[in-house]
Image 1 (cartoon, rainbow, N blue to C red):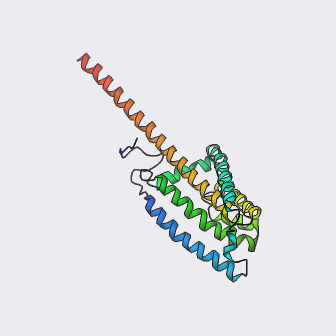
Image 2 (cartoon, rainbow, N blue to C red):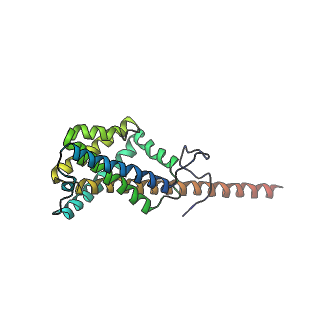
Image 3 (cartoon, helix red, strand yellow):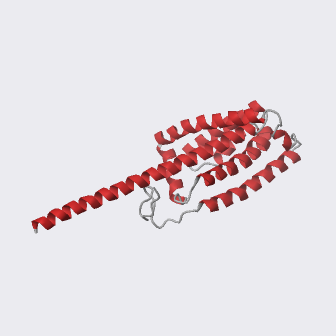
Length: 224
């Protein structure tokens, strides 16, 4: 059900609030992602770390990707439940719905945004930064750069620790990239579903209100 009634929006969203089209988000993600990849590769080379191609071992990539998908899915399930329980995390979802053009957001946008976050961020944070500064510091910096709120800082730091452990365990980036991409993809898809449910409830409320006005108006006509 695709609604076009202007005032059917997420709670707290202003009718005049400009919203970003998903294509703009994809463009911004591609630009920032390119910078992170260049920065991560340059960091690794200048610091004398293992050559970047070692981040993607040729053998065992499929099991690592499969593991990452499973871990990312499980983490997303738990994280979404946490978002419903913690008000400050729940507000993050409402904030996103207030600034993104949810009517235009589709699966392919969510997938592209997941890849544009998962690949470059893992190259920079787990590929280049973690070997230089360690798991904990790299995870804290990762969380700080995602710190919309303190609760979200803690959430993102926890996610960074999980992704960093995957990188250490599998000695490469296949698993953390897959997990990171799946987390972002599923969270965006769940956000889309939440917005659609809100729109449906709002439409139902309007329909019931109009029906009630019709009934009241009909009674008034009968009295006249």
